[in-house]
Each structure stands twice: as structure tokens, then as C-alpha cells.
Length: 133
Image (cartoon, rainbow, N blue to C red):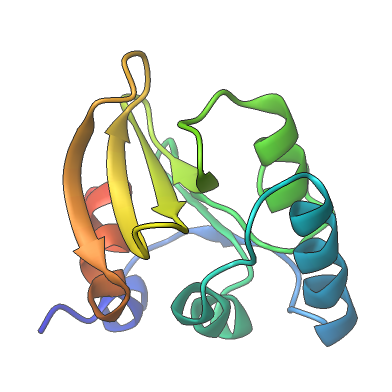
């Protein structure tokens, strides 16, 4: 199985500040109040180790004050498919989580065409795909 966290160890990337439980709770509440479901548990597990990362034009969001990485700001500012939470992006695609289908999706940025889908257990494949590892 692909292990995204292991792959990260060999990369030079920028990450958000360490995750604080209170910041995650606030992010969850704000996103929910914006009409979205909660951040999926498998992604919150990732945030506990890496609270958002930037690498070579690709981003994974966290519960952070860094505007490039803040999951709340990006879900407010960027267009995304309905019924999803935006978790990251690169130059071409978005990484979304469809909370009705309970799956990660790689979505084309302009058309919102779903290019790839991953179950919650396949989180590492989805993260690797959007980061182009």
C-alpha cells in the first residue's frame, strides 16, 4: 500500500504550525456552519502529523492561520463541487471529499469532472495524487 506519510519524509516541503485540538474543533464547526459536513476522520489523522503542507505548487490544507494552507479560507474562497469539502489542490486539479459518497475525489479545476475516486481507507493514494508524488 502507498504510504504518503513515508513519502513525505524524503521531500522538502513547508508545513503549517502544529495542530492544536481547539483549532481543529473550530475548523470543524465553521465548515459545518458553512453547510459542509465535518472533515473526514482519515484526513484529521493526517492533520495530527502534518497540519497542512505546500510542495512544488501543490497544497493540502490544515486548521492553520497560514492563508495558503487554511482549510476554512480556501473553502470560502475557491470554487468546488457541491457536497464536498476542499482539502487541497495543484495547478490542474482539486482534492475534495464528497461527504455524501464518503470518498476522496480528484476533480478537474475548471470543469469539476471527477477524474479519480478513493475510499477513506485509500487516503494516501488521494494525497499522493494531488501532490504528484
